Length: 108
Ligand SMILES: [Zn+2]
Ligand SMILES: [Zn+2]
Image 1 (cartoon, protein in one colour):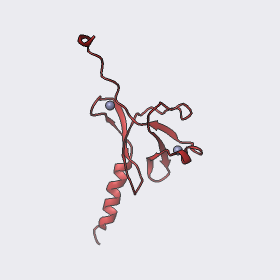
Image 2 (spheres, rainbow, N blue to C red):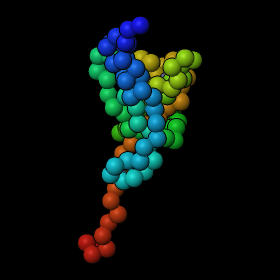
Image 3 (tube, rainbow, N blue to C red):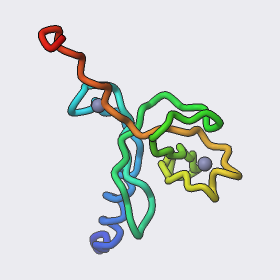
Image 4 (cartoon, helix red, strand yellow):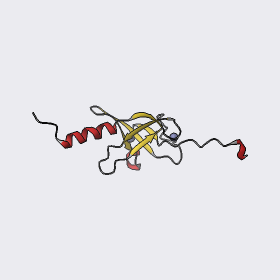
């Protein structure tokens, strides 16, 4: 018996970081989905709104991500680039943007 090779342990830690999970936004406390993209070259930590958006009418100025279901590894988030978007059938999520701070009445 030997322990798990270090690269397998690292792969497992990476896999759990990639699994989308609900976390409140640290700034506005809104419910958000966070996950690391599965991209090995430039993995990005994504924070997206949990409600899917209509990919034909995406909210302006927001990055779009695909929620991809894999049979064995579960859900993953991937960058919805313009080439992929043409053939995409996934659930589409938009980057979370905090709502604007309510305007203080004393400023008016
Ligand atoms: Zn897609
Ligand atoms: Zn927020």
